Image (cartoon, rainbow, N blue to C red):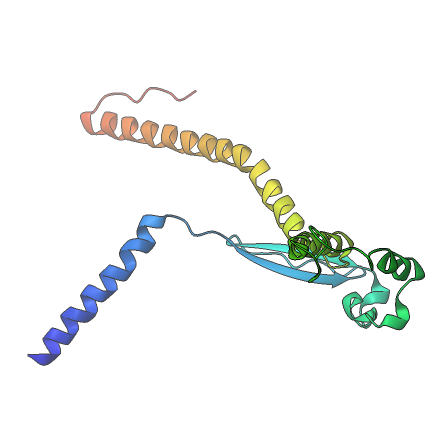
Length: 181
């Protein structure tokens, strides 16, 4: 009796889990992001996977990644940046991002946002989102042609089936089969 209850509970849990998956339709294809070097070929992806290859020079294969090559040491800071820092030494008050003066804290979020955009603009990393969008666009550009080709093949097959049925019906009734064109 207990095993029947457990079996029923497992069956209902399986149905409950499969219902949302069936309602969602086709799953989003997986994305495989690779960095390839030199003339290495980009691997062919199966139908359910989008493979995006970022190509780098052969000389980069065994090097330390670009992000780790640079140093944030103050010794490597340019003099222009040091001079700009001196220009803001006396600033205080509203929009200054300093603890001095009324509203000195109000400029801090602006400085953080500016620094984030500057870092994003000069980031040496590969922009996989742009490569993924281009690959999706390439796949979507052929979907109409693929659909029309499939429709044409289906129509040809349907005509063949209809001809066979007519020939079979004519043979069963004993009538002469009309010649095919």
